Length: 373
Image (cartoon, rainbow, N blue to C red; front, side):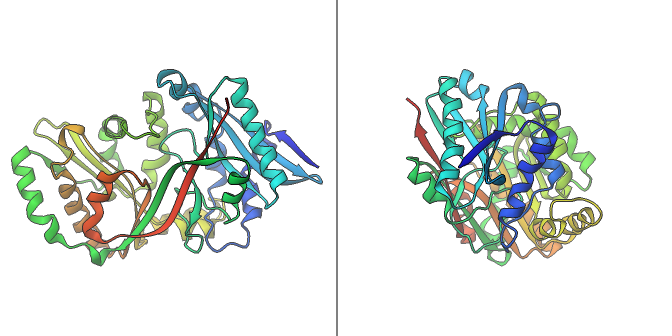
């Protein structure tokens, strides 16, 4: 018999966070989160997303042993301002037992119905800066700190419960040697002169901070047309600055401004932390922090996390300016492999940006949907 229990105490939430450590203990490809950071994400006092969203966390028990988990999320900005009556769920992990997964999904479904929502979609987080999608290909590749890894049996459980594909994503990689500067070197000089724009270089995190709020504003503008978009509010900006920017080498943050110092393009690249996080195994101390710091300084892998161009400058070659800046930085640091985070399969514009680098898809993932009416 499966028992579903809501995780409300600190002890329960810690068990919620730790469950995947057991589920994937023998996996070479799963990348553990930092336990402290995961708990802070779920802390209603620390994460400002809870001013506009609510989440409940559930554990599945079988014979008094935890065998699954799920978070049930409602983003009220999405529901009330955008009119999208979506019940979200994420952090969904379970043993290969249909009774377990279906009990957890039914719990989410019931909450959606109680709130008169129209459909359930997942796995997703609170917003576009959270992890997304269940993996359907690429299980033999090392995951990243910004994606969920899962066993191959997961998708069968969604389909059995009546979920249908909602969105499809792909993740790709290319060796840095594929980057040929002739594709953007001359073009970026012409674009700078034509539009009177320039790239900003940073060597210290403190130099980035005065532009960080403007970056999130531009993120909202440049991503607003995507079907999965939920805006980042002012109060969330402070939280994300602390959560993400400290993890990024300042040299890996590129901004492009116009003649009036208005931000019109940005990109954020993260060092490859996957192997360091595996060594840390969820803990910053005693050695986890040193593994992460070493990766931040010396990793030869990088992950293109975010890239955004102001709508007025899209299709005008601004990305060539950004790529030229990264080319010089990566060449100096000896970067070997570039990875891209999950990108919507129907995002034709982003595919055009990367086409000259001959990227290879190494993983695919999906979100799935089920009607509640």
